[in-house]
View 1 (cartoon, rainbow over the protein chains, first blue to last red):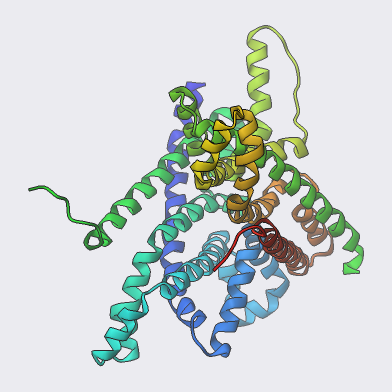
View 2 (cartoon, chains in turn purple, cyan; view 1 turned 90 degrees about the vertical axis):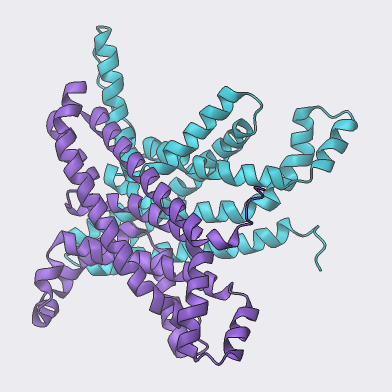
Length: 232
Length: 227
C-alpha cells in the first residue's frame, strides 16, 4: 500500500500544481471581472444592475458541473459559429474551458460578496469624502472599494476555498489536476482507496494552507481596526 | 418534447430531488449529533467532532464520492482477503451517493446547529432545569423548538449548496438529472440544448427552495415580537 502511494506521489504532486494553477488563474481573472460586476450591480440604473443580477443568479443557482459541460461540450453545438470567430481552437481545449467556466462562476459569487461589502460601507464615510470634494471615481477608489474589500474579506476567503475544491470537477472534462491524476492511477492499478485517500490529504494541505495565508492577510488589512494591546 | 427526451429529464429531476431530500435528512441528523458532540464536556468527543468537520469541509465532494463508491468496497475486500475471505462487493450508487453527500453536508449543518444552540437564551435552559426537567426533556421541549428558528437561514444555505452538489453523483452513474441530460445530449448531439435545459431545471429548484425558505422563516418567527 505504501509503495503504490510513494510511486504515484510525483504524478499526484504534478496534479496538485495544475490544481494550484487553475485556482490561482480563476481567482485572479474572477476578481478582475467581479469588481466591475459588483459596481454595476449596485448601480441605480436598472439597465446596468439587472443584467448583472441575472448573470449572478444563473451562475449561483446552477451546479458548476452543468456550467462546465455547457461550455466544454455545449460549445460543440456552435462549432461553425465559433470557428468563424476564430475561437474554436480555444473552446476545443479542456484547460481553457475549465478556467473560463471557473472564472465566470467565481466572478458571480465574488461580485455578490463585494456587493454586500459595498452596501455595508458606513454612509458617514461616504458623506465625509463627498464633503472633502472627492469625485465619484476617487470616492470609489479611495474610500468605498478599500473598505468594502476589508468587510468582504472573510466571505471572500470562503469563496476561494470553495473554488479550490471546485477545481476538482475539471477532472471530468479530462484536465489532469489532483483528482484527474488520481482517477487515472487508481483505475490502472486497481488501488482506489490508497490513491483517493492520498488525494484527499493533498487537498486538505492545500485548503488549510490557503486558509492560513488568507487569515494572515486578514490580520494585516484589519490591523488598524483592532484595539491596541494594553501592555504598559 | 425535447426530441423525445423530456420524460427522461423529468425522471432525472425526480431522482435529483429524492437524492437531495434524503441526503439533507441525513445531514440534519448528523448535524444535530455533531453539534451535540462539539458542545460536549468530554475532550475526546469534542476532538472527534472537530476532526469530522475539519476533514469533511476540506476535501472536495467529488473526491469523497469517488473514494466511497470505488475505494470503500476495495478496502473491505482487501481487509477480508487478508483474513482469507474472498468476496466481491459493489456499492449501490444511490446509497453511496446519499451517504457521501449527507456526511459531507452534515459537517456544515453541525456548525449551523452549534450556532443555533448557542443563540438560545441560557436563562430558559436554566429555568427548565430548575423545573426539574432532565437534560433530554429540556432539549426536546425547550432548546430544539427554538433552535430551528436560528438554524433555518443556515440550513437553507446548506440545502442550496447540497442540491447543486447532487449533480456530482452523475459520475457514479446514478441516473439523476445531470446524468440523464448527459445521455440525452450524447444521443441527440445537442449538448448545449440539454445541458441548458438541465441548468434551468436546477435554477427552478433553487427559486422554489428560496420561496419555501422565505415562508418557513416567516412561520418560524411568528412568535417573535419585532420593532
